[in-house]
Amino acid sequence: MTRTLRLEPLTAEAFAPFGDVVGAIEPGGGAKLSETLVALPGAATPRLGFNNAKAWDLPLTATEMERHNLSSQCFVPLDVSRWVMVVAPDLDGRPDPAALRAFVATGDQAVNYHVGTWHHPLRVLDRPGRFAVLMWTTGHKPDDEEWSTLPEPLQIEA
Image 1 (cartoon, rainbow, N blue to C red):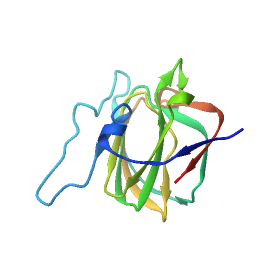
Image 2 (cartoon, one colour):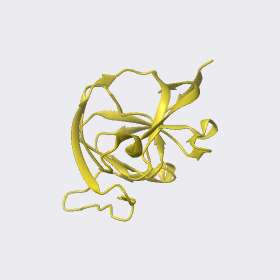
Image 3 (cartoon, rainbow, N blue to C red):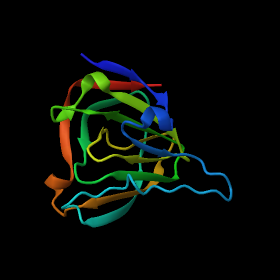
Image 4 (spheres, one colour):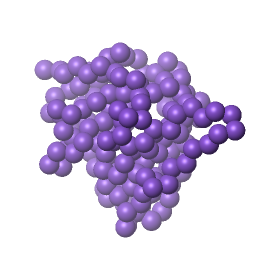
């Protein structure tokens, strides 16, 4: 059986339990993230990566999620149309299937996932999208990311 989840527009208020949203900044303005850019003991090496994500079509199917227990993870779009994030709080060491949410962001919205937030891997819509991604690492992948299979596939629709 497959569960369906509809995309909702990304807003700072709706996304607050999972992380931070930095939206479009007016000319001459600015935004800073400091309190929530977090590296816990052990994750001492900052990693700033750049990627060019391939474009996906809706509906999307999610079967697993990941989280980073020692670092926040910040996605900053550099050249993106729209992008999707599927998130869930933790329930006994796994994503809480009853609390899954799916958001669609515009190309001028950056997201910083809080430490331990379950999230689906990056998916962009419409065309490939370039991102800068900031997090801290231990240098040991099993300590830096944890994966969990969802109890049933999740279909994400507009």
